[in-house]
Image 1 (cartoon, rainbow, N blue to C red):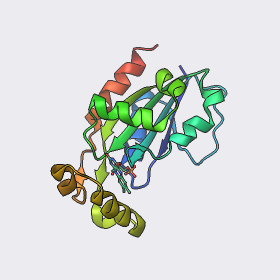
Image 2: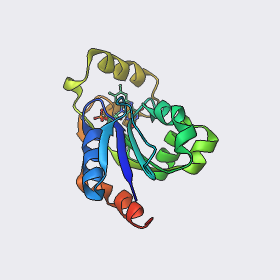
Image 3: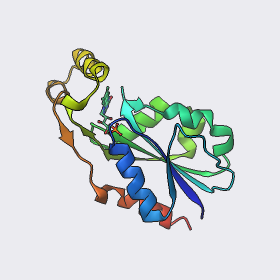
Image 4: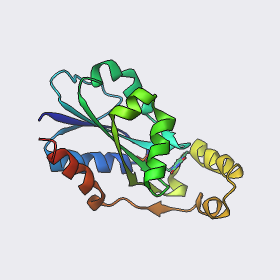
Length: 165
Ligand SMILES: Cc1cc2nc3c(=O)[nH]c(=O)nc-3n(C[C@H](O)[C@H](O)[C@H](O)COP(=O)(O)O)c2cc1C
C-alpha cells in the first residue's frame, strides 16, 4: 500500500506526530501547503491541529475531496482537549460535510501548548475565547501550558493501517 502523511502544524506537535507515523509506516511526509501529487497514493493520512473546536486545516480535505474520495483517508487531530470519542466526533462534524465525516476515520491525539511561545494573535484569541467558556475547570486551564505529545499515542492509528493491508 502506497501512502503519504500530510499535515498542518503551527507550533510543531502535529508535525511531530506526522513524522512519527510516516516513519513507522515507511510513508512520505509533507506539510499541506506544499502541492501534492496524490495520483499514485492509495492511502492519505491527514493531520491538523484543532482551533475553535474544528480542524484548522479541514478545508484542505474539502478542497481535495474529489480526488481523495476514491482513496482511503485517515485523519488525525491534535488538541488541548482530551481526545475522547465525543470530542473527536464533534471535531469531525464541525470540520467536514456529512459525506466526508462518514467516509473518514478520525483519531484524536493530545497536542502541546506553551503559552509564552504563542504568537500575539493566538494569545489574544485564547484570552477572548476564554471569556465565552462557561465551565470553570476548562476556563482555568485554557491559558496553562500542557504537553501531551507522546509517541505511543500513534499506536492505534498505525495498527489500524497495518490491519488494512
Ligand atoms: C489559537 C488557538 C486555539 C486553540 N483552540 C483549541 C480548541 O478549540 N480546542 C482544543 O482542544 N485545543 C485548542 N488549541 C490547542 C491546539 O490544538 C494544540 O495546542 C495543538 O497541539 C497545536 O498544534 P501544533 O503544535 O501542531 O501547532 C488551540 C490553540 C491555539 C493556539
